Amino acid sequence: MAFIQTVSFTTSRIEEMKELLDGFNGQQGDAQVRGFRGLKLLKDRDNEDAFLVLADFVSYGLAMENSARPETDAFAKRMAEMTDEPPTFGNYDIINEYTP
Image (cartoon, rainbow, N blue to C red):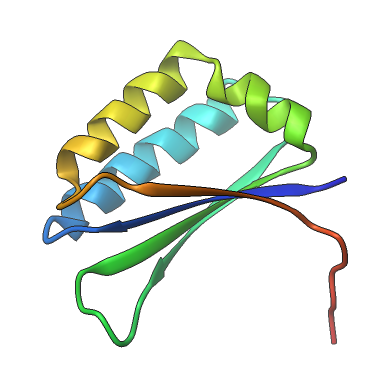
């Protein structure tokens, strides 16, 4: 079953965060992380400094393998340094996908 991890955070340092996410996304592709399908960065229209990252994986198991990588741990620590408060994580199974 496909899986998405969300990371909700606030920051006034979004340009730095975008650079960090760009680098991490590239690392994932370079490392050929099994099951990683990509990242999306969303901005809250109602809260200027609120953002959400969607990390898309083929399965929960492969996402957890990715979470255990030292590179992922280093990324999470660096990300937390750039947020105004500790990020909030969510773990979601995709139970259905709708396309037009």
